[in-house]
Image 1: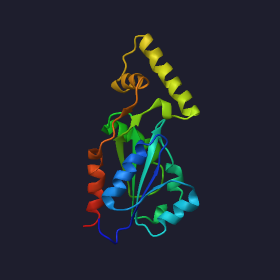
Image 2 (image 1 turned 90 degrees about the horizontal axis):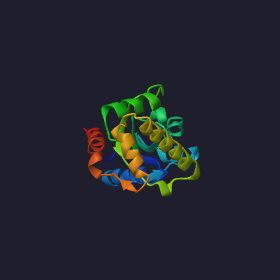
Image 3 (image 1 turned 180 degrees about the vertical axis):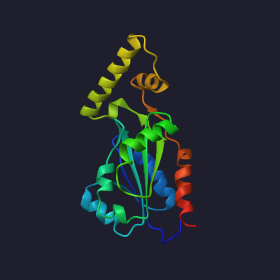
Image 4 (image 1 turned 90 degrees about the vertical axis):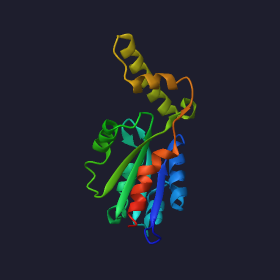
Length: 186
């Protein structure tokens, strides 16, 4: 990335997988990764930046912290916003389309890219509310299974991860995002 193309990497992470990707991206770009920590801090971090790379975990199809990012004073002044999110599902065009439709389509902010990376799951690291929500999801999937419904591969995987921690993070998932950032210098 060229020196005058000033980028900020900001993330919001509940379980650590998004943070891991944000740190990897920041390392590759030789910049700092900043945890989303209030509007004042956000405006301060973005004050002289042209590109924002924001990562937030995916919770019930919503990207954690994205509304705060897009409402920042500097959001519309940036040349580019690159959003990445992490979740348990396999990456697919269908998954990315659903995430885009539910999070970015109606934002009114131009020049946004979206990337989806597989994260992981550790039930023991969840907060109280998230544990309840995940138990409800597990019950819903279990009821579908008991009624003879066919489970998707994601649903089968979700039932499995309650028993053990899984980590699907991989630096190779960053290749296209980094390629886009590096292409901006040309």
